[in-house]
Structures are given as structure tokens and as C-alpha cells.
Length: 183
Image (cartoon, rainbow, N blue to C red; front, side, top):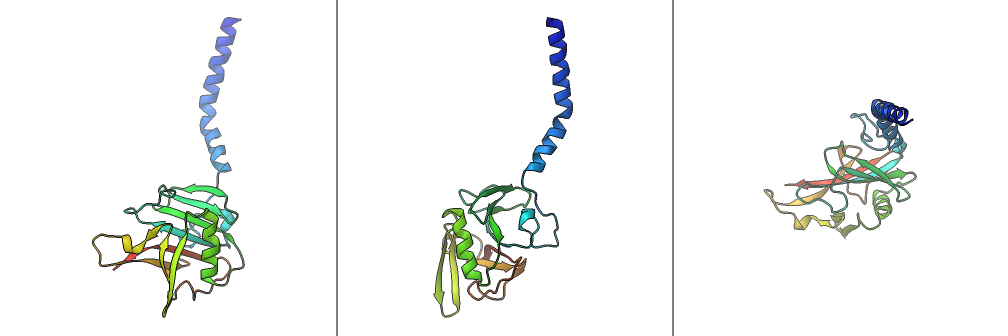
């Protein structure tokens, strides 16, 4: 009986070792799937966000965010954590899955609230419109380096935005991205 138990245990262990890659693959398939289309502004975002409105905040390596310092964290429109995409070669967070926003500032303020305060936004309204100076605790005035100044750069669907966030007209499927720009 003891020899039979040992033999059965060894066979079970060998079978488990042989099928472990298959098990790993199945578990990975259960995790969030990301869009793989480098021609699309939705590249690297959860597939369920395709055609939905999304905001992404990318923090510089020199000033990482405490919560979002490894990969890009994906946060759903309901505030749920959808996982981290570590293949994007940057850090930060994206909040997405929204519909129906037409004004960029309204969308930004509502969507960043889903991160429970971790992506709070500070801005001023001046003669040129809304000027965003702080996102997620990172104020551009606190950045130092080999540059004259820094600003939060706004991209709309992967292209530099020609208008500020307060004047940005959004459509379904739009993605706005904030990252640090310097001069």
C-alpha cells in the first residue's frame, strides 16, 4: 500500500509539473486583457474600455507616485481596481469606462475622483482658461532638473491638445493623457 501511494504521489506531481504552464496560461486569461494595437490611443488599456472615455496620468520616473509607481494601474468607472499593465514602460494610472462626457474639465474632475483622492487635481482659472498645476500631489512648481520649467502636458487621443482642458470638447471613445512636459 505504501509503495502504491508513493508511486501515485510521484505520478501526480509529474502530471502537475507538466500541466503547470497550461494552468498559468488559463489563470492569465482570467486577468484583465489589454488592447494590443499600437496605432490606437486605446493601446495597452483594458479591452472593455474600447470605445469608452478614459483619462491617464503618467508620472515621471524622477517623481513617482506612492500608489502608482509600478506599471500603469487601471481603475474602472466605479472605482474598482482592474489590475496593472506593467508592459507600458511608464508609471501612473488610467481611469476609464466612461460615456457621455462632452467637456474635458468635467470629465477630468469626475473621473479622477474614482481613485479615492490619489489623483486629486489642483488648478487655477486665469485669463487663458484653466491651468492644471497639480495632479496626484505632484505640483509642477516642485520639479527640478536640467530644464527651465515644467508643466502638465495634455494629450487628446494620442496627440498634443491645441486647447486647454476647460475648452476640450470630448466625444465617445476619447482618451486624455496627462504627463510632465518641460522647456
